[in-house]
Image (tube, rainbow, N blue to C red; front, top):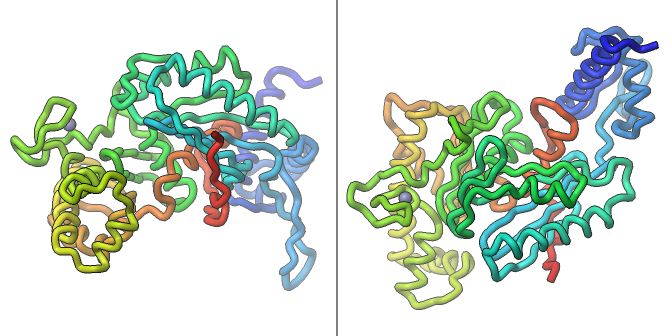
Length: 397
Ligand SMILES: [Zn+2]
C-alpha cells in the first residue's frame, strides 16, 4: 500500500527526474541517479512508469567507443502538443508545437474588430478546432498560452490593452468555461524574453529582451522567473522619457523612448514623407542598399536614441544578456557594433548584447514553450531551436 507520504515522495521524485531529462535533453539512467541522488532502483521504477505513460522514450546511442551502448532517455516530442496564440491588433496568430517546442504549423486569422464579445467566440471556435484535430497523440494539446499586447496582472486578468481598448477582462476565466485545456495569459514581451531564454540563452539567469516593432516591449527573465513588479506591470520602458518636451505620446507624456526607437516611428515617418501606403521592409532595404541618405540618417537616429534608453536599462537592471528584436536592426549594416560603441559608460555593465535570432515569432514560440513548462511542471526548459519549422504558415480564412 502506498501511504500519503509515499505517494508525495513519489511525485517529488518524478518531478525531479523529469526536470533532469528536460534540462539535459538526453540522459542515461545511471547519470539520472547521479544528478538526482536517487537510488538506481528508484530511477528504474520511475523511468518504467514514464515510459509506460509515453512521456519519455529510449534511444540507443550509436557512437560509443567501448563497452555497452548506453540507453538514453528523452522527452517524447510526439506525445502531445502546445498551442501558442498571439492576440494582436487586427490579427490572431496560432502556432502549434510538439512537446519539445518545435513548431508544427502556424496559422493566422485577420480580424476587423476590437470588440471582446466578438473576439472571444472566434478564439473559442479556433481552439476547439485545434483540439479536435490534435486529439490523436498521447496527451493531445497540453496547454494554451495567449500573448496579450498590454498589461496582464499577476492573476492573469487583462488589465489594459491600448490598441484594443480593453480593460479588466478575464479572458482566462471566459475561455476555461468553454474549454477543458489549461489556459494561461501572459504579456507578449515576457513571452519573447522566455523564448530567448528557452531556445538560445540556456546559460543565463538574467536576461532582458526588447522588441522594437510597434512600440518597445521589454521582457525580463530573472532566475527562471518573469520580473513582474508589484502588480505585474513592470517593464513599460517604452514610456521612459528620454527627450524632455519631445514628441507627444498617447500615454499623455512627451518624449517617450518608443516615439524614437521603435520601427513604427521609422515606418510612419517614411510612409508619410514619401507618400507610400503600405511600406515594406523590402522597400527600406532597397533604399538602404542604394545609399539613400535620409533613410540612413533615420537609422542612425534610431540607434542613437536606442542606445540612450539601453544605457538607462543597463544601469537599472545590470542584465547579463540583452537581446534586441528588430528587423531594421538586422538589415542595417553594423547596427550592433554601432549600438555597443554608444554604451561606453564605465558604470553600466552587461555581458552580452545580441540581436534576436527568432524575430517576430518569438512571442508565439515563447507561448508554446511556456505551455510545455506548465505541463511538465519544471522550473525552466532548455529546448533547441529548429529554423525549418515555421515555413508552412497559412491563413485560416
Ligand atoms: Zn508614452
